[in-house]
Every structure is written in structure tokens, then in C-alpha cells.
Length: 182
Image 1 (spheres, rainbow, N blue to C red):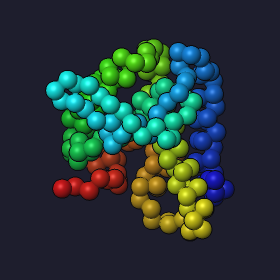
Image 2 (image 1 turned 180 degrees about the vertical axis):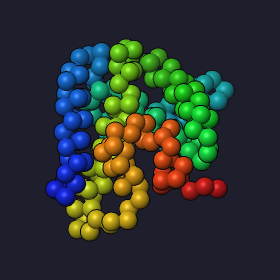
Image 3 (image 1 turned 135 degrees about the vertical axis):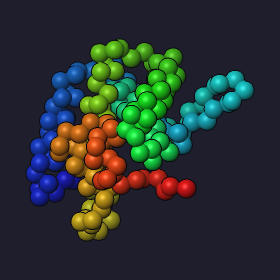
């Protein structure tokens, strides 16, 4: 799916897939995941704190960390407009601890796997990039050379910039915002 002209991206793709393959798969790390776990696919009963997850049409077998990486990526919400990286980091640390507590109440995750969050965020970005190429090809469209979101994600992968560049100095000047500021 990735055009040959993206040789560095293709190389990084092989590296990421090899790193995930080397993790192996056991009952503790791998099983049925949601694969589209984000705040649009669950609701919270604010009286009881009960979370109801829905929209399982993309469920598949994969590493549980892929769900957690998806939650992290989709959790940037309005904090992405915070100009100070330290404040963005503090918010994301707090947010992720809350999300992790909920997830691990049903599916335990080892500390060893939690250390792999940056890897799985990169793998999730790779999945988004490949999906973009696949949709473009399927619909017979030309790849737009000025697709800022796609080019930003590719830069994060090619230059090994973790956490979607969210804490990197380039974020404030180069990050294409995926949400419209209100």
C-alpha cells in the first residue's frame, strides 16, 4: 500500500513490525481487542461511574497495548491546543492513568508491556498511514502532496519522534490539528 517513493517510511514500517513481532503473543498480552477504542465509542454513567463500550465492528485479535495506544492517541482532544508541552504532558499522564485504570479493571497489563506504549503509538500511527494510502488507492485518487496530517504522521515515524510528536518542540509549529478549535 505504501508507494515505493516513501522508502524511509517503508523501512520504518519493517522495523516497527519486526519490533512488535519480537514481543510474541501470549494470553497475558494478546487477545480480542476493540481496535477503535476512543471517546466516541463509550459512554459514562456519571451517577455510577459505569463505562459502557460499544461499536465492536472492528474488533480483532491483537496486542492489548494497541487498544491503549488508540486511547492515548484519541485522548489528546482539546489539550492539543495547549501551547506548553509540560502542561500537555501532565494532562496526558493524568488522562492515561485514568484510562488505564478502567482498562486494567477488565484486562490486566504488565508493567513490561506498559513500557511499550510509545512503540504501540507508533504502530497505531503506521496503521493510520497505511489506511490512508489504501483508501486513496481504492478510491482511485491521487495522493495529495500537501496532506499536512499525513505528512506530519510520516515525519513522526521516519524521525522516530514518539507520542505523535505531542511533547516535541516541532509540535507547536508543525502539528496539523485534527480537531477544529472552537
